[in-house]
Length: 464
Image (cartoon, rainbow, N blue to C red; front, side, top):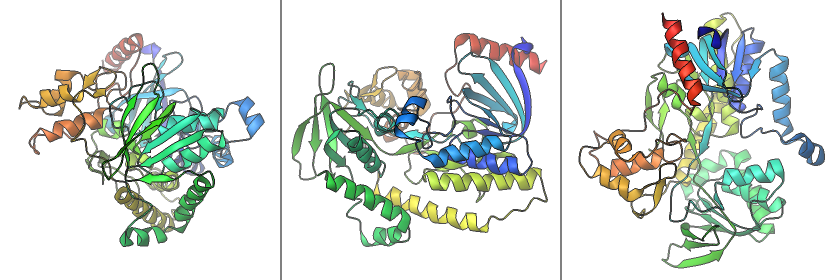
């Protein structure tokens, strides 16, 4: 069975082909190292530098040409770009990476001298009554349809949740002809306090970007309803109405055929956590982030983390973090290379301050009033009440609750519901007993059973 697994070697494995991974791979390859870039998608670019299908690109132009240029530069530098390649495990402090071809299931084992995790983030959802109805989607899905396929997610759209991401999504929807029935922001970021204003003024580029979005919305008559939230969605086979709650206690019902609800992003930290790097809570208190130094080095020798995987800070910070990590790896593996990082570190610190400001402006909602009947884990059909009942036994911490209810055991493996299950478990547990997040285990992503059997048998052969 050992011959089923394709063996390869490289100086550095970069896991993730988004902005952080691309910038890092380019610096590493230009520094003379043999670099393998691994990404699960069939194209490079991540979510920010996504590629339009050829026909749409011909009709509407390239989407974010900067991404096209960056990808071309990476390939021209000699990086071994392996798309459609799932990283499902790792060991030996990241020096052995296990992969699978998402199209064929073919297994691979990559030996490296250093590994950079640039695995990005995914959208954060919070459940509410009716959130499983068809037509209720994340803002990122709506943005993908609008930018990649030039298709509106609906004719009458309600956008809700919290975070600056709602603004570009709304503008993209308007551009493809959707009507915005309401833009519902949980917090008051556009009526900030004095301290927040001072922080924003130190980031004029980001401030101008937000102002452009707000002006575009105003021209279309879209007002941001601050201090409001979605209470429930209604419909039989499709969402048809949504209840919006306001600070004064009033409730308004809107007709809609698409409801987009999101609460920012969650860092995808499974790989560094699997490898045992030290973690600490992020500023929101809802995630466990790898502890890294100024250049992205973790507590695991030879393992680096860059981009939103190290904390949500946006595309500009991701690129700089990728470059800093790459230069640190070059100093380690190719000493003598020029390493000018002072300016990059200053820029990274400034962008980190802006990210901290965003965390203050867009705090996450409490789950204390989540109705018991609301489904939390959609994969396994587990409700908030069932999770609370399991926690109330007194001996179920987060992992005990997971085992008792199966919440987080479905195909998403807790990526969508894990933070909610953890929050509910923590509400009913003693602080020192509450687990911080689901443990990262192999496989990091679901694998076909045949592939899983081959992987286990291949590892057993290799260990003999």
